Length: 99
Image (tube, rainbow, N blue to C red; front, side, top):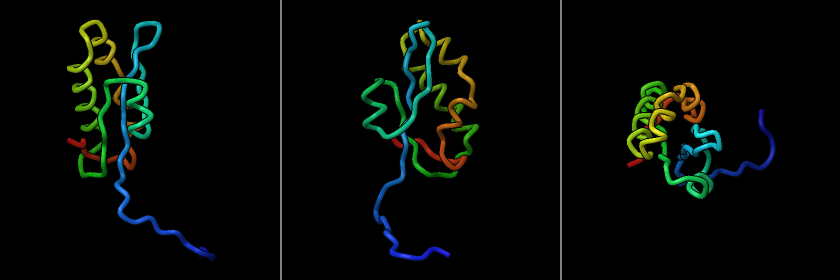
């Protein structure tokens, strides 16, 4: 049982952002968080909202999208990213890409 005053937040859109940044070694790293934080570190990011698409399929779509966006020399690094790495940033195991 929860006692005390409760604060309800209403009309708050649930969303998160996943992006990739290049490392000094020439590889790529997946980052996640609020849009303001991720967009400040990279130009390659997508927003995710709650939805019905399973995280495995969504992670595959995100990886393919990033591979299309990045310059040619980083494309192989993006395609070699583990889907589990991207899935870790998808809350609740399901979601949808925000257009």
